[in-house]
Length: 305
Image (cartoon, rainbow, N blue to C red):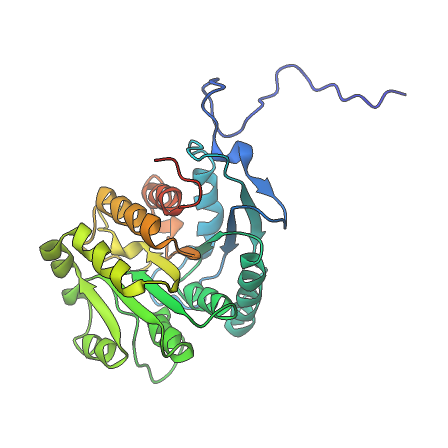
C-alpha cells in the first residue's frame, strides 16, 4: 500500500493571498506554530475581564493574527514563532494573570522580541510581571489616551494598570505618550507625577514633534530592558474606532506607525504588546488592520532598511 499523498489538483496552496505571485511571500506562509526558539514570538491573551466600557477585546488576538498573517514578509531571514494563546480562566483575573506572567517569562527564553496581543490592558501588567522575572533594570513605555493610575474604592478596572506596574518596580522608567487632558480627571495627572511617571500629552507631542519625543524617550531609557505597550485608544477614533475607550484627538494611523517604527528601532523593546482592540465595535476591521501593521513596524529584529 502506497504512503504517497495525492492532493486534489485544485486546492489552494496558500490561505493568505489570492494573487499567485511567488515573490510575494506573506507572514502566514512562513510563521511556525510551536513552542520552539526563534527571533520573534507571538503570544495571544484573550482576556477582557477588567473592561469598564466596551467589552470584546478577548476576540482581538485571533482577529489581529488573521490580518497580520496576510501582511507581506518584509524581513531578512526572520523566524517568527506563534506560541498560541494563554489558557485564560474566565472570571478569575488573578489566575489568568499568573498564567500570563509564567508564559511570558518562559517565552522570553526562546525569542529576542516577544509580541503579546491582548485582551484588555491588564494584560500589559501581567506581561510586565513576566518580564520583571528576568531583570529589574526596566523601562515601560505606554501609548495611551489615559494615564491608567486610577484610585478606586471597589471593583476591578484596567484604568489602574500603570499604578500596578509602578508598585512592582519602584525604579523602572515609565512614560506615557498621547494622553488627552480633556478625557481624564485632573487628579490623574498629579497622581502620575507622584508616582514618578512621565506623561506626554497629545498637545506636548504636537508642540515637540515626534522626533523630539522619540529622542527624549531614548535618552531616558538608556540601557534598560524595555516593554513597549500600545493601547489603540491612543489613535484617533477616526482611524481606530474599535477600541474599549475611544478618545478624539489622537494620533493618525500614519503618525502612530511612524513613532512605533522609529522608537522600536532605537530602543529595541524586549516585549511589545497591543491591547484594547475591540473587534465587535470595529468598522471594516480598520482597528485590527492598523494593529497588525503596528506589530509589523514594532519588530526590530532583522528588519530590512
